[in-house]
Structure formats: structure tokens, C-alpha cells
Length: 530
Image (cartoon, rainbow, N blue to C red; front, side, top):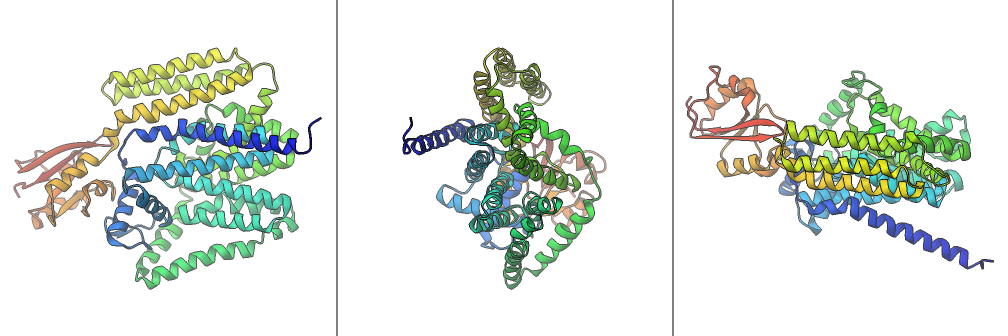
């Protein structure tokens, strides 16, 4: 018979073993790719790099600026955090990518804790491992954006919310509202759709008035509004009142109106989510069914938070796959339940076994097609596609193995996807999506105060590596603008040259260089006859 002291000790040992396992998984699947250098890619990464560069150069920390103009799209807190990390390492690409890695670590451990509390230690362990190796996490965990940071704030908000609901803990309630506020500070009001909206609608939908009141919504929303008002006051006192008007017109009123006009269908995310959950899509579905039958209260918590947030973000106009990242921890918890259920069985179902094989096959085919169509039949690209094809074959053979070996095998194969796609392949595609060569050419050709015009291009995508501001000119105005600035350097896409030279032929300019960025050809021109 086990002594009373032995059981807690064994539990602590298992806890730390799981923690060590997750650290190793994160190091292998995500941190290892940091050794492969890549530039900040256009569009978003280079734009965020420029926002931070201008913050550091100007010392204007309250209001983000992009190419000299106020940048109302995102709050400043993400850039503050990256700058703080950069002060310890170095300001640049590494700081951005390292901050994403740290956010992935926080989101992973949050998923682990949430899974443990909802479904037990084994489900929590597998939920975290599934989250680390989900295709969506593999992608977002390598991008210099704030979406993984938002994901971390959301999962810890759910951990605190569940603790409050089960124990009526005041500390947990404060933690929920603080985590929700952190999400808003990182990403903006959209963060509330993932945390506060589900938290308030769940008790209202169940007519649980006591549960709704226990959330202290007036106090919590007051905290959020108070924080926003304090920041608005600071911006106003700093003389940036025009920035507040821009936020109101573009980010609040503008987005509210545009939310009724959809570029993608409302069901866009429903079809995309299964892809981001690969190779654990089948386990997430089976886990949801099992969870509902075995632990209906905990299942309702997960599914309500998941579905309310999914419906809410499906109702807004702008839709990118990366916006689904905050929902992946909830899906990973369902997959973790599916893993524990599978381990109790003697064999793996045919559909469950074939789904990830098909996924790997399609992924290999996509890399092969991209190598032919974009990379000029680069042998290394075909080699990487072949590796994934072999992984698909190995995955098929894993279907004959016991469930535990199958799960461990597919966890390892998902790590291979990370190494192939975000390690080896990155060196091949980096020149295609980096603006560094063009940016450095601008810095070389236009030193000092020489004017530079960027024609009809997205703001800020070349400034970071050029290390300077540029004049933004519409393609229809470039001919007239150049007449007034004959000493300027002009950066223009080849597709837009006809707006400057209607005859379709570029005259002999003293500077005429060609660069490719994001599969678009750019010309750098100066000293052109007028």
C-alpha cells in the first residue's frame, strides 16, 4: 500500500517530467529553427520592424508610427515588449523571432495547465504536445507577429476563468480580467471576442444570473475602459490627438461598418480550422465527442469558448488564417482527450490513421509544385518534398503500430515538418519574400537627405532595411512628382512603369537597378531624362 507521502511525491515527479518533456518538445520543434537566419518578410513582418525602428529612433513610444505617419492598426505594447527583449539581445530580426518563441512557450504551458485542470494530467500532457505540433502553431510560431502573444494571453485567461468558476477565487477572477486586458493591449479590441465575450455569454445563455454576477462584469469592463482612457489621456497630453481621431475613424467606426462586407464567406474559418489542426484533426473531433459524454461540464466550457469566439470572428470582414491561432489551445485540449481515449484502445481506426497520411502527402505535393513553379526546379526543394513524401509512407506504416507508438511517431513526424518547412525550406524562399536587398540598395543609392519616392506600394515594407523614411507617391502622380524632384530616387514596380513612361520604354537613367520582392519586380531609377 502506498504511503500518504508517496502519492503527492509521485504526482510532483510526474508534473516535472511532463514539464521537462514540453521544454524538450519546444526546443526541438520551435527553438531549433532560430539557428536558421531569415530576414523580416514583407508585408507584416517588415512593417512591424519599421514601426519599432521608428520608435527607437524617434523616442515616441506612446503612438506607433510607420514611415513617419501615425500607425493606428495595432497598440504599442507589442513593440515595447520586443524592444525590451531586443535590449537584452540585439534589436532586429532575432528579437522579433525570439519574442514569438517565448510567446509560444507561454501558450504551450497554458494549454498544458488548462488540459490538466479540465481533463486530467494525461490529457493535459497530450494537449500541450498536440498544440506544439499543430500545423497552425508550427506556422504562427515562426512568424514575427503578435498573434501568438494574443494566443498566450487567451489561454491563460481561460485558465483563470475556469479556476474562478470552480473555486470562486477572487485572485483567479482578477487574473482573468488582467489577461483579457493584456490581450487588448497586445492586439486591440478583437481580443475581447476570444475571452470576455464567451465568458459573459455562457452564463447568460444558461440563465445563470449568479454566475454572470460572479464575473463582476462592471468591475472588469471598468478596468479595461480605465486602462484605455489612461492611455488616451497620455496620448492627448503628448500632443497626438490627431492619432486618436484616426483610430476612431479607421479602427472603430470604419471596421464596424466594413464588418458587414465580407471578402471571404462567413464559413471561411470553419473550412480552414481542420487544416490548421493537422495532423490531430481527427483526434480533436473524436476527443470532443468523448469529452462531451464523459465530462459534460468541462466539455461545455471548452466548446462554448471555442464556438462563441469562432462565430464572432467569422462575423467580421477581415479574415486571415493567423486569426484562428488563439482558438488552437482549446482545440488542442480536445485533441488531448482524443489521445487519452485512443491509448485505451487496442488499434487505430482506418480514417484516423489515413487522415494525417493524406495531409503529409498533400504537403509534400505542395512543396514539389512550389519548387517547380516558384523556385525554378531547385533540387533542394524537390529533396525536401521527397522527405515529406517518405514521412507520409512512414506514417502509413505507423498505422499498424499500437496507439502509443502511433501517437509518438506522428509527434516526431510533425517535428520533421517544422525542420523541413521552417528550417531547410526557409533558406530557399527567404530571398523571395525579403525586402532586404532592395532596402539596402535604397540606403546605398540615397544616403543622407536625398529624397526617395516609393510608388503605389504598401506603406513601410521597404523602410526597415533602407533605414529611412520615404515619400509615398501614387502611380498616377509619379511623372508630375519627379518633375519637381529631379534629384530623387524612385522605387517603382515594373508593372506600373507605364504610368511614368506612357510610351512603355524606360529612358537611359544614370541609376537603373532591378530587384524582386514578393514575386514582384521593382525598378530603382534615378537621373532619368525629364
